Image (cartoon, rainbow, N blue to C red; front, side, top):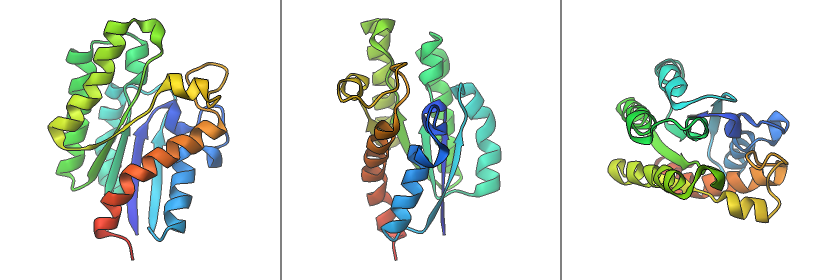
Length: 187
């Protein structure tokens, strides 16, 4: 049995939807239906930051010994206007290294900020994920808030996906991680 840990914030925790409607729950169900025997540990906590994730990750790695770590953090840091270079990027970089050192495949979810944070900050924020994925040779899952809003996949707050949004996120995540898992782990 494979173990996947999703270290995230409210997007992973399923804010505004039932737990079994959140993308991590749907992912576990769909992967198992496709013959990938995996248990997903949803370590998403609403409001969490990269600092919180960095603090929580060692215990998660020790306790679960995951084959896969999906990092979905940074959004709350960005919403608080934290320094991309001095805080967010450094914390994500440390979590990537820590996960890889523990023997896990790592997938990075590129969180996007609402456009009201200004083009310069939101562009730098988005590019940070691309840079980290390139540096560590990771699969990067990118989404678009604008597309999700236009497709009516968001809750009224414009930040959190609705049930259909969670289905869309799960499809994107599964598409990116399945090749990693198929290489070694499918029966």
